[in-house]
Length: 108
Image 1 (cartoon, helix red, strand yellow):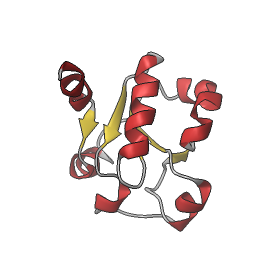
Image 2 (cartoon, one colour):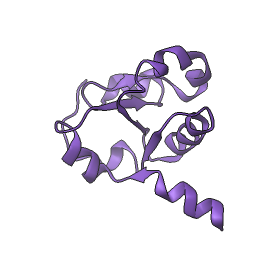
Image 3 (tube, one colour):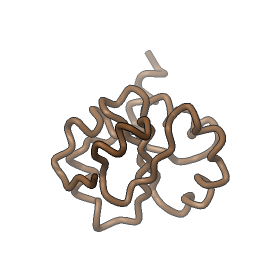
Image 4 (tube, helix red, strand yellow):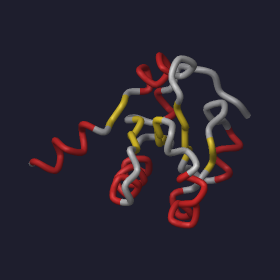
């Protein structure tokens, strides 16, 4: 039960991400597949598929000065990625419900 409470603190809604999108220094990481990313992604997000996350640590370290927000299609993969990055010492936040609930701009 306590773990669920702790994990919930590190979640952010798509609506809140949209509110801070142009106002705060954020780094968006998309952990979906390359094919999903090409279909549509949040502008200026960085594609790092979940299965390649551990190989991209040096790239992610360059983002540490920003608020790191992780997203996927529905929030499942991003939750795994967020927990992995938090375990590595990063201040990562999971965008719950994923890009399917995103009402902001989409790049293709």
